[in-house]
Length: 105
Image 1 (cartoon, rainbow, N blue to C red):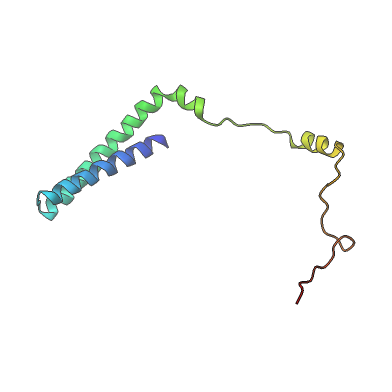
Image 2 (cartoon, rainbow, N blue to C red):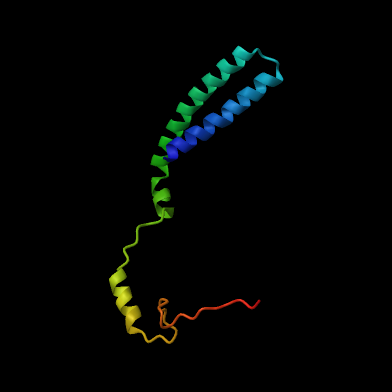
């Protein structure tokens, strides 16, 4: 996915610069379209290979900062929570503990 992001960003930046340059120097519309398409294709491919090389080169660094999967035992934690005495434990609304609150008029 990193390769595609690098390729897309590089292609869009170069394509935008090519479009701006063509408009500023008064090139014909077909020439501008042709140059923009060629630059998008060439720099998209170049960005993909640049991302491929960068990903191989910085793979260890990327793995270091990527969040790792954590295994959480929910059942054990629930048992520990139930063992603790709690004064303000959550209890759902029932007909016995629900009082209707009315707004003053």
